[in-house]
Image (cartoon, rainbow over all chains, first blue to last red; front, side, top):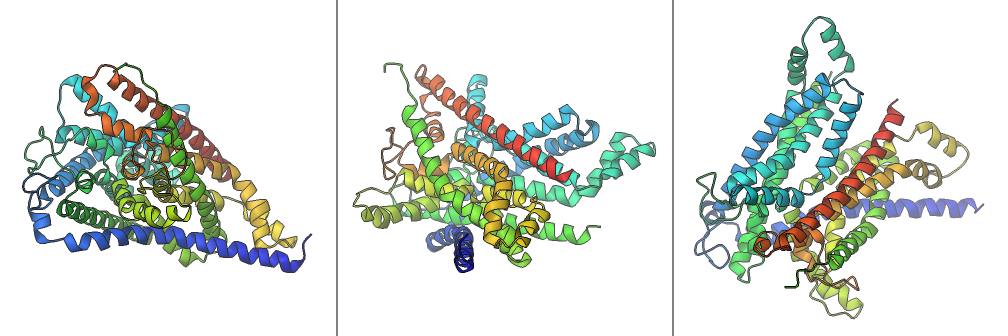
Length: 284
Length: 240
């Protein structure tokens, strides 16, 4: 056994290393945001958010990224709406209609957990092959469908976690009073309503930031998205394409787009926190 | 066109990037998670965990931008010259660093959850026998948390395997087996993303790419299943 002194010294060293790694992890966040802010801020202007790129997104020096901003908002909005409309009923079904603890219930939960981990490039590749097979070309619609399936597991898992916070007796007591399962579901939905908003925000954040899923399915366009069957630009893709351009002005557009995207994401994160804090306050 | 395809360089690219990311991330994440659960005050924890979760919310493409603007030049100008190597900076090391930061949140949040399930009695028994806090962590907490830590790592690996855009942007994309960490690599997801849209016209090429997607899907499916089953078991064991 080492002397007490060396043991305490070890304790101190270990603690120092833990502090350092904690700081590294936290600092990496500020590092990333700082780099984007530093590079993007000089290029951020009113034209950037109010105009479409002039003379081609890859070589044109004028204009902004309005096409990508709008495209992203349409795509993420529609996909989030669809995945919420599908995901909430699925989670309700999994918890109220399927007997809890049964093999089916455990299997379906595991399945959604696993689906959550499937990378978006696989979703994109599958959707792209299906689209080729069905003769649909890259379009806003294709992107929306792909992203819907990408965000569905997020909504299902989040709502499932929310339902877990409901006292287990509530379901049995309500049912024992002679209600139908659908009436229980209505009570549950009322109970978790603020939480569903969190799930929606999470899904929106994921869908607005995804590249690999839309890279193959929604295409890219310099025009404002008008029709659902036409290719549409998205912010992440605009960043990805313009960053590889040799022209500094176009690269600047990529930096500014990155800043806009981080701003959107941070707003979502902030909203989520406010919602969660509110929820905690009202918890009984 | 000979019509023959091989995935070895791409598989090696994926593996090397993931390995570098794990070497960086595992110690940092374990130490951070232990610090947050055992040492940190409640207020520090309440401040740190949301920041870590914010890291999870940042889209991959922004990690890619950070990689191109910061990690790649840093490797080119500062890190590689130390070893006397001339490189563009676009390398598996850059991919590994970017990936490491990307898997911080998933690893830390799962590890914190696992560490919190360690019964207090075990720790207090060890402490009351005169062990220092660090010795308790070494010999009691980490041993007990091992399955959970492994599960978190496996989940992180599957996340790293599938990560496309951020890695594609910083890895250099040269289809060659990387021999040093400063060599460029070409991971599988990047291969799919770069070629899928354009190569549908060449016979068999799309099948080969679809096979790459299948490969990725199956590997990640297996990894996810393993880690989820471990985590579900742990949850069940401690929650009664």
